[in-house]
Image (tube, rainbow, N blue to C red; front, side, top):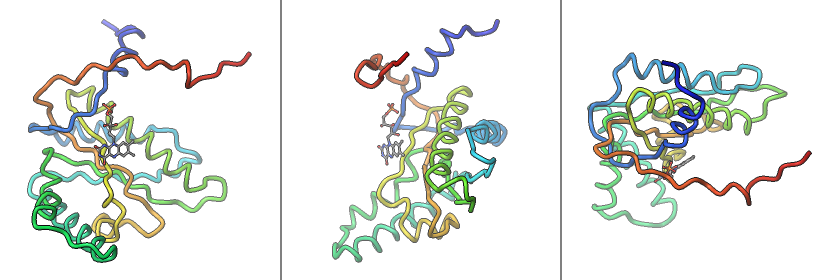
Length: 194
Ligand SMILES: Cc1cc2nc3c(=O)[nH]c(=O)nc-3n(C[C@H](O)[C@H](O)[C@H](O)COP(=O)(O)O)c2cc1C
């Protein structure tokens, strides 16, 4: 039976970020489906500025080590010293979900498509990705954090100095139902003119 537009709108509005994510992660086929949806995001001049890196299993430990290195380098630059506890927390960050889909904006040179449009297109791709994962029964949270565009992290993801790590989409199965959301009062946010 086809879903009604009311159901569809209710479904979109029901998306919530979930910080606590367990296995199972999506299968390879499910991730591919979600990434295909991501690539239908609005994309001026079809530049495809987005890249997706899927990290799971032991690769999450490597990502944790990269984040910790980035944190240490950042601390040194800022004249700070990280505690053992801070370092351990950072190393373990990627273990908060069974899968992390990192979305990168690889800036494409184009006269009519400035960098901000390419970053926004990536944001739209991320939202499509998140909804396509939800449609297949998975929960997510979009995180960036202060380290995502530190040099060590950029190097790990093969991201150039003009490019951005735009999202770490933590992905998995939520042990709890996604919390319900109170409808937003859009009155102060909108002006209708006719
Ligand atoms: C670009 C971007 C970066 C974000 N980075 C983080 C982050 O590093 N840590 C975090 O807890 N939430 C982050 N968030 C917010 C969460 O993804 C989420 O939207 C927020 O917690 C509200 O929850 P909701 O999606 O259920 O409304 C980020 C959101 C965006 C759009």
